[in-house]
Length: 224
Image (cartoon, rainbow, N blue to C red; front, side, top):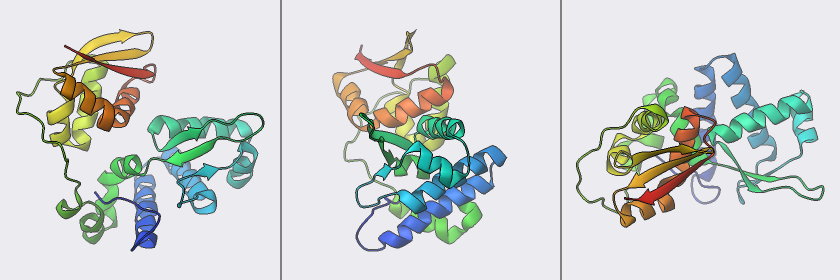
């Protein structure tokens, strides 16, 4: 999958690729998803700073742009954060608005199923085999551990849908340690495995878990 960059060669065309993927995803969804994605696209085209990956805009400005009230802004921005598409980079304080950023990789992952609706050339350009990133760390051979039931089982199925190889190598070996006070504990087979997941895959893992159960706010990786 291609990396969306703000500068450099073909930067402009890659930005259009992102917006095209979002458009196709929205059109394939229901009216609620269409409206949510359209509103984010409006923020991106009107206010997103590609150079610094920053979206700095107050709720009143968003409400005016979207032609809605403040309550709707709060609800929809919360949905976008839960999806992992929008992230808080710096929390607002003393009258200053929060600085937000876009998780471009997450957006492209979530829209991948609809790329074919744009055309085979688009799929080849943004997500063909030649564009797939190669991991710099080769996982040790291990038997694949079946996913358990419950929240972690559902999260594993989501992660497998996104990237079967990545899931088999890194996620399925994590054992469900239970949920307590909104925190899911996962047991890794080794310190190396735990550190790699914490360093490189924690964001993707947490989003999958929260989509399986919004009551889970944190994930902790421990060692067997």
